[in-house]
Amino acid sequence: MRRSLQVRLSQLLDSGPFPTRWAFLYRLGVVTAIFLSTGIAVLKTVPGFAEAFGHLPSLIQQAAMAVLAVDYGLRLLSAWLLSGRGRKGLDGLLRYGLGAYGIFDFLAVVPLAPGLAMTLPADWITLCGIAGFLKLARYSPALETLGAVLRREARPLQASVFIMTLLALFASTLMYFVERDGNAGFASVPQAMWYSVVTLTTLGYGDVVPATGLGKMLGTLTAILGIGMFALPASILASGFSEEIRRRDFLASWHMVARVPFFATLDAGQIAQIVALLKAQHAEPGDMLIQAGDDGDCMYFIVAGQVEVAVGGGARPKPVLLSQGDFFGEIAIVRHSPRTATVTARKRCQLLVLHRRDFRKVTDTNPALREAIERAARDRLAQSQAAGPEDGQKNTAATV
Ligand code: CMP
Image (tube, rainbow, N blue to C red; front, side, top):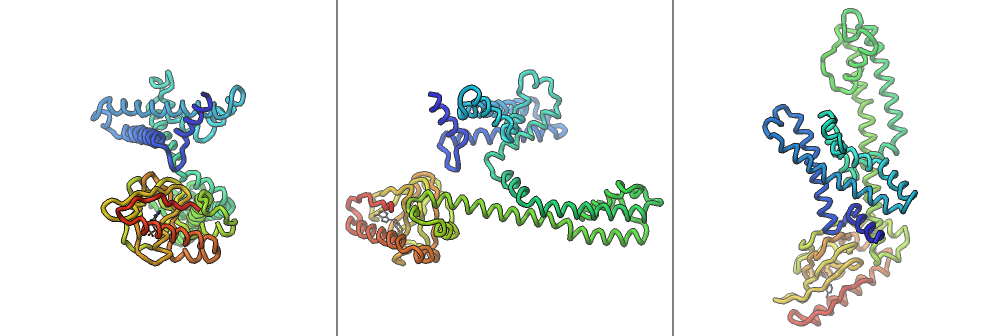
């Protein structure tokens, strides 16, 4: 009982990229509640908003927060059930509650805590509504990616922060010496710091400007140095981001390839080569992936989901179902012929696509794969031709 509740809860709360129908609806509900709660918190700060709409926005916000409170409760229960009974359960509860996601989940519902709704100042309610947006981090890898980039690029970032601080400090001190007489914006080094930072970052508000010729020359130099130096962290972060995303894509593709039994015999080097050549693709139920008669330039491996191949043509083609581990679209690649059947997604699918130009690269280094694909193409073609358009079709799904 406890175990089945725990399994159901983790299916509902922590489903991966392929959630069940219920998990998908649940996630949709929570995400909608987050948008409503945060959106209304933001809009309530607009003067006249409350007068124009009365109590309605607050009621909607409270309903949205109630949904988030149920989500928080279920997550607490799941953390307790997952970690075990007694002391262990408490540990699990604390790990979730004091972790980043637990804190985000908590902040989103603070205003609903008994006794707080009436007493909490309006600004705090606004802040909690906006902090609730952080709950979305669970459904998007953006924050995790940022954290990973900051950790990996910590050294170059530290170096560039040091250089920037040095520049700001020297520029402010020099400007202070040159401009302090009669220019209130440079009356002290900290005050001159505002000018230096605004100039180095190329913002240039223009509220504080040097008056002397020497000060203007220094200001010019500061602005030029700023362009070079302050661009440094931006470029470090940009290249770190693209590197991290490439790494994550590679890992995700690696996991997908490892899930296809067809590639089970490959060693790490061969998988790495294939990962670089395969592209991930999603398909929703009803999406047509291949149309009979079209030219084909790629084949597909099914990582998850199910497709239907309409074999036989004619008025009543016979459906053949292919699922995880199967592949399709190989006939056009192997035989350089048009597509022999129409293939449509039956369930939500996660696919790996291998382009015709890469097919040789993969199979040249792996003759066994080539042989298996060619054999499947031969068998399927023979079966389709033998069955004919009106005939019954046996399931010829090829899982190698
Ligand atoms: P292709 O002809 O490139 O595009 C349609 C695909 O449907 C085809 O490759 C095969 O992968 C698949 N297909 C065709 N006939 C059959 C069959 N009898 N059984 C299973 N799959 C088939």
